Image 1: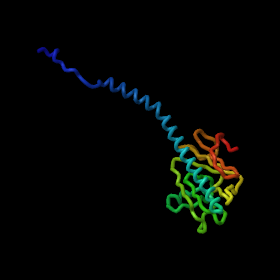
Image 2: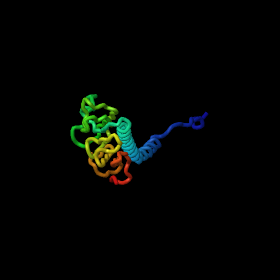
Image 3: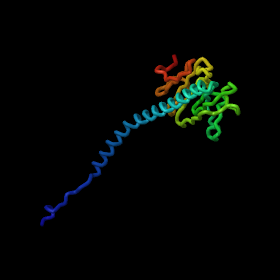
Image 4: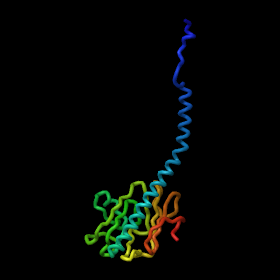
Length: 187
């Protein structure tokens, strides 16, 4: 038998074919990565917005059902890490999370007379900026202040209370019902 007639058929890829396939898959990944990062940022903002709106609805419902003032305050980041959550002493940064509590002394600060209803520690990647460091609901369910709003920002965005791509705006009017604004400002 002749060697040329017995030649086995080779199987597999050549180096050139493998390099071409890697180049095509790399190009597709490069196109898809920014889209995936944008999707992830939107998911973080959406989850954070819904978490804050749930806490605000809970506070309003607790105020009405208990017949007492209930406040929601920004959590102090240092106290969140220590496991004993306390309200932020000053500032408008709600990024560490928030605390819903029965505010018996009507000050927006937690003390021994107050009872904690709910604590939410926010994920580290999200940013939340409010008009103040707390909001208080009266026993009728209306806000103690005239209005408030919160801006939920995506990962990597600066903590500024201004319209940014991908950010969400939660508005509270005097009635105390939270809603997500469709415009860059509350009406």
